[in-house]
Length: 195
Image (cartoon, rainbow, N blue to C red; front, side):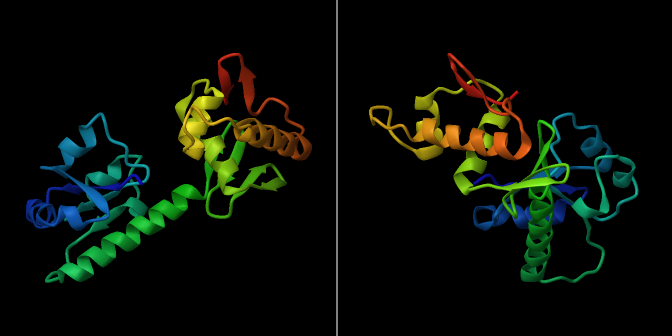
């Protein structure tokens, strides 16, 4: 499971405290000395991340930062347990919101409800179907049967099985029947893919 990021901006003492217990945290902590360094950092992925600071003056000027992913601490003292509880609750909310609307090729995938939407139409998906869609979409390349066996099902390459083909066939049929879309999952001599 990928840990969510918690960016600590202009709050060195908090970073030092959390850094001492980082092995026990369910999130990854990253430190920025000041708001300008954080805002000007080019490699930020703050979509599903939390930002902790003492103030929000400059941070909210960035269009990618909202009050949903910003936690301001200005009421002290605060116990470590309470601090971690507040951080974890905010991260859970962010993850839930992030998972409730993933746009893929004109469709909306809700990981929380396991529904796939396009307009007014919806389709209930299985966990494995969701894994297939996300894997094909996120990697943006063609995947052969052996690759899918290994990365989705965890099968070794010497196992003779038609599981991948069967699942892909059924998923394509469900999408075609519900949305009249024959081109959601495409196949090529090099494997399956989603454009």
